[in-house]
Image: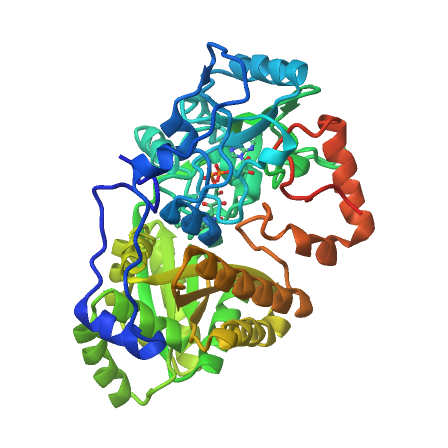
Length: 534
Ligand SMILES: Cc1cc2nc3c(=O)[nH]c(=O)nc-3n(C[C@H](O)[C@H](O)[C@H](O)COP(=O)(O)OP(=O)(O)OC[C@H]3O[C@@H](n4cnc5c(N)ncnc54)[C@H](O)[C@@H]3O)c2cc1C
């Protein structure tokens, strides 16, 4: 059963090792657990729905609570404290595109707001209702999860868009195929959500971001059905698919998505390479990314991240042994860790790893073999569970991300980290900050920063601390001329920073397109463009 006020399945937990507790004390100070609201207490706060009874709607209080918030830190504060603020008036569970079509016709007739809901894993406030805008229905797509069509010759698979990551891969694996889209939220996020937020998976180097995988589909809008035909490529003017990618539920509900799939790989390997310092690691990673080798993943952890992740995972002994070995080989404090993944045939994996490792050697890289790769593979979807355990101890964890050309990576990374480290000075609180580059391109890289801080004495104080940190870091991203999001999307949290990136004309153009599909502003209002373009 899914946790109602945290991450993931209730049956999984992530025990924080004793040494990690000591390290957290050192980094940001001792913390104490805060009292959480119980499910019963929160259910008692669900207000009466403003909608009249309809057979296709669920008014169940727990249903409404479970769809009220996503996974941003502000959502966590609300869920743990029981101060949810706004609930959907009802939840709908359509089973077909026709159900969705009928629901939208009803919404139009009754001027009811609609919030499309995939897995609810948004970390930017995408699915939260805004009560002031009038009654709203959250449309949970989980009953639309079937493989509808498979064109094995063309390697194209069409799914109902509410399908979750594990369900996609299970249905494809049975046919010897793989999609290969593995965001860290894979367990719970959905195909429709990935398209609507322009998501990026951990092995995007090989399979591509969702933009590359999404080949076409069907979108139900308030103004009719939008069919997106599938072509390998087309020069027939601007691509309407691009309007749907990143539309964040504002344009319509994606009911079907055709994706480009691949044969299941014969072999997959992840190896770790240490570098004496960040600059060596950065130069090697950039050179490998620009060499266009058939790799599936490059992930460069800055020194603080490498140390933090191993400590939190309880691998001090492994870390100690490796440190001794690396010191012996000439790399001391301040080392960076590059994980290199290769996926494909035995020959292509061997070729790609040999070429990449040869480049790392030229930049003083010391291969740590497959040990780190194996650890990463084991924990790749487990790490978010740590968030539950740390919260229970009194620590908040949040992440943010951006992307920028290589020539600007160092300056942006430093600006974001420094903004976060100083962010809680007014409370005299320390913030533990660490970063990795997770998606590396020929021309630049994404920058993914994690930060930990102590919960405040009250939920209001925790929320205020987070708001200050989020604002300082977002301002640093904008001042660095980097994108406000490489993969998490805009939602509510990033909407104030969108104009800096798109410009007033660009933002007005996006707003005009949304209005063409939704003239009265019923679809997920307040998200992406908050309150309309300038
Ligand atoms: C622990 C954790 C790890 C994460 N890791 C990653 C990562 O590695 N990479 C990454 O890209 N993101 C990541 N995210 C962010 C999040 O998982 C993505 O944004 C994901 O794409 C959201 O998918 P979802 O199905 O949960 O969508 P939801 O959260 O339900 O919705 C997100 C937005 O999409 C819209 N939407 C959803 N379904 C549809 C539909 N069928 N039609 C129209 N609009 C729709 C919603 O209205 C909303 O605006 C992570 C989040 C968490 C909590």
